Image (cartoon, rainbow over all chains, first blue to last red; front, side, top):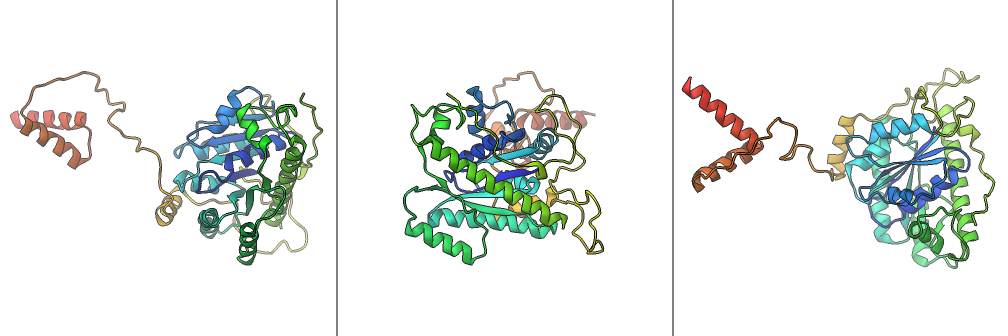
Length: 226
Length: 132
């Protein structure tokens, strides 16, 4: 019953977008709960639009006090749980990491963002130390350019690789469709190509990202069973 | 518009070995463990004696609190106890008082970290004790 938390102490890194994409895609395979623990409740707002798939439900009353209970309830009800968090270094983030099976750290390709990701990574590793169990995680580069890989991005990727930080091979490309999901309160599926360009590529991107997360979850499961 | 795409993902390995539940249909009993990788679905053959990490454990709340303090992941929520909580204090008392007494009263409450209502209660019981 995998639980995936999206963590980044910096706002605008793409947490909510990537969390929603993953949840939507996963919901094609099995029921998913998103625990929207961002006090701005962006996923709830999206969900209130009424276009969410049947397999996707949203829990939006999680706070520091209740997040562990909410996640455990969700784990009991749906095979997948996705946790979206606020973009700050808040205590609730640590609680979410504690209950997650896999942590995704979305980051944009800049040093500023990378520095904040490093904070998230430290938080994950400290919990590993505390519990004596591996807490698998990976950095997800977001809002990348479809056309070119910038030098900063390349530099970032290299330094993360050198530091032994796991990175997803898929990046989330900056796409109109990902924004349109929120503007039109629609699923990627439900958006119309008459309104939004590049929809096919966006869908393929979301699918590749989800497939990679599923692979990571399987690897993590195999490791901990070994 | 929404051309239903078929499900491209194979997640069977990640689901519980039970038959798939109908999506969100009825209340389900909690799974035995909330952690995905249940430690022993079956005893693995071969190196079974290999010492394994203890059962799925997560840091305790106290440990998380400590970690939060150490790493600056601070609480963004207002403390639960504000000036309004269930106390049974539901009557209004509007008084004209001297500035000096008012200041003392607030200062006392702030120093003690209590609400004005509680400060008033303490004052009343202190007065009662005095007159006994």
